[in-house]
Amino acid sequence: MGKLIGTGATRERAAAVTELGQALAQEQRLTQNLERQAEPAAEVRRALAADAKVRAEKQGVIAAGEKAEQKLTLALRSRLADVISSRALPPVWFVTVLGSVPPAARTQKWVETATGVLLYRLTYGIADPVVALGDKPAGRPGRRVKWHKQLSQDLRYW
Image 1 (spheres, rainbow, N blue to C red):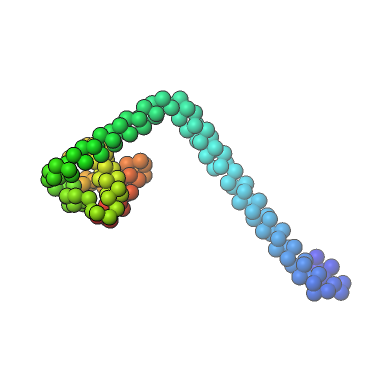
Image 2: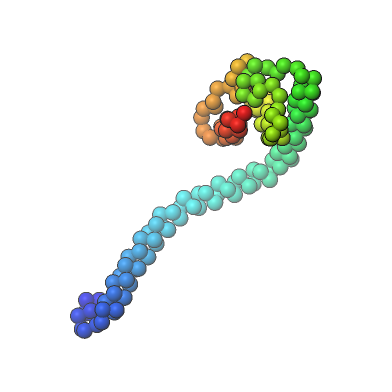
């Protein structure tokens, strides 16, 4: 490259040579990055394939669980509607985070949040008489941790 520049090449050629050198260096870095990521990417593909296989094998159980969750959710909504219509006093943990009745605005969102809290408490056996969601779950982020976080955010509205 030095000889090409030294033989009276124009500034444009010199700039092109510099740009080419930079592009080649970047290509080399990107190729090295790609090579470093090949094995982790292959591991992820294997893990996804294994997960897909397990999901396919357990599809019946998954579907039954989802159906049971829907049925329980409907039963909880019905029970919540009964409590509200009868003007019964909900438990302290409920009133503390949601109030005793739904607000005039955003009633549907309130019912969804209340039902979610009831379902969470039943699913994880929360019996705390004051704290709606019980203790914050510890450990690896999973369904429970994500659900707790989402409900905590939803409860901030009320």
